[in-house]
Length: 141
Image 1: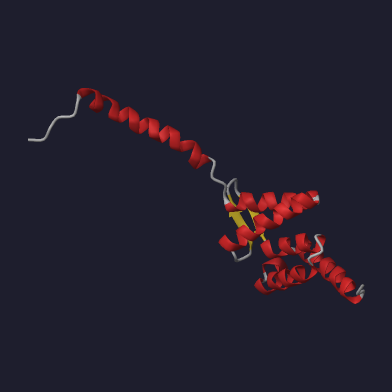
Image 2 (image 1 turned 30 degrees about the vertical axis):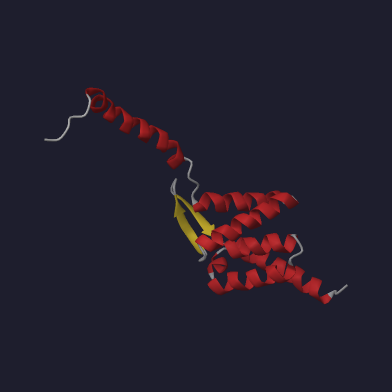
């Protein structure tokens, strides 16, 4: 014969399950999705301050480790679409931080994947960055 649990435990068991669910719910809601991290990085790049650029680069490095393949017109919540171009964004940051070799490399990777070619504004900026990088390599100090 199995011992019976005290009445207090049998009454409190359902409440403890509800309490655990309530305590764990904020942790689940606080989760950041990859596209939010990406958008935060792009916003930091747009602000153009050095600390923000370095933070954006760190965010993009994490994203590339988790989601290495760029894609255009990715559906995200809210029935919105996003062009996920992490290598292009890294090149933008690196060129502004004076990391010209790294910027050149990330532009090449971005174009090799091909997703950047589906975004006209990004391709215009790719050409601008390439021209700037060419000019900088032509003028050696």
